[in-house]
Image (cartoon, rainbow, N blue to C red; front, side, top):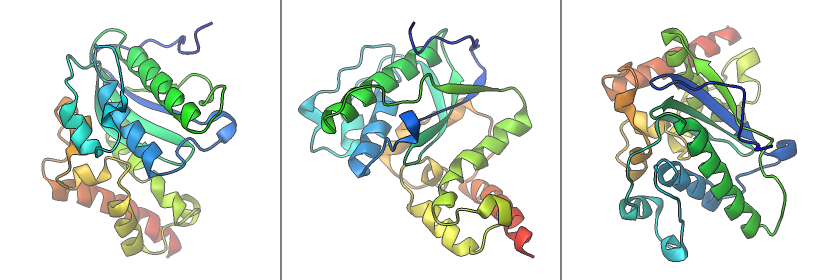
Length: 228
């Protein structure tokens, strides 16, 4: 049975929270090169064309590689992403029929081949099929912009969801330096990785960069009040 088959219908124009983790909770991003490769594949695999990642791109920055890639029609719209050590989160929109399933198949296959070859291993890298949640409420869709982007907070404050945030300034600085997510793109950092996203396909919750920062501040402040 194809591991990418699922009893889950994706509908064009609808939004979905997609996530998966390493087999047996193993780390799937061991270093910066792994994270950059996955981010590159988020861009390259999002195309109706076949994926061929050649050694041609070795030595180039992610941004330089993205500029060299010629994409045809994209399969999905990516609004948010975040990579953690043993899992990842995506917020995406189905753009063409079967787009999400094909995109995730190409992404998982391409990254698994890279990771296994680099680490001289065999077998499944991911824990079965990717997980998907249909985001059918506007309030939930907006919430995911904070939930996904705030995932890295647990790396410096492991119990922040239970007891609140201890140091707001430290948390914000850490998120701004955490480059393997789309957080800095919503703050207006001018980097070529922003081409991974198609923000226009998502509601205009944040018309200006300061609106997104204020939105994140609200969530951090909310969690920080748990200490009071």
